Length: 287
Image (cartoon, rainbow, N blue to C red; front, side, top):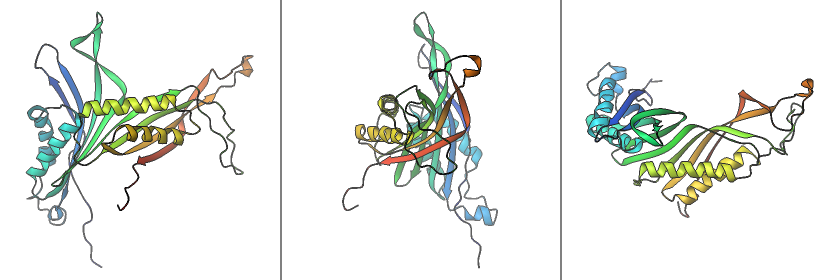
């Protein structure tokens, strides 16, 4: 039985690229964490140590920085498409280039009721994401976000679930629903929206749907969020979620002679339920 090389790729991970826009007195900032990977016919590099077809990972890093200046960072998606195309063109043995971008948001520091021209404060928690896969056939774009922490203090229940001899969880008619949301949405091939406006619109709709949907389970909430996004954005083909259930447990204050009618909780960080789901458009007839 012969031994052969399987699927492989290589690249540079987590290049911290900060682009300051200085085209006037009011500056802008895009703060990125960029990872690149090339895949293709790199068998000789593995089996023979032949690097003649390998674009060094250091070159990929340098290109990420150079393209932040040469192409600019209008949005994570636009930058990633350009960077992936450049890496693919520079590596004849490559069949595809994947670029993953995380963006850390900064807000202008408010001074006398207005945002300062060149002073910023890092926004905590949430991270914008983009993953672009570039081949000769074009670019496949998946936008998203992670670490979006949301909570609703009512409007959620969980009951009627399966029970066996190890079940101790009680039915909950009114509970806190909280999660640190990771969501991604895949764009239809060939679509080139206003990436920033598209991201902001999807994010706003995810939050509004979470807030206004009565939840009988986190699964139901995720489905409602995905459905709302797809109904409102015809250029998207699917929405995927990973949502850890951030449990909030009612604290027993009886030993202290105090009532606790759903007001004081302990936030338990682990173990936690992890709910994952993808909502997508139903295939058209004949496909």
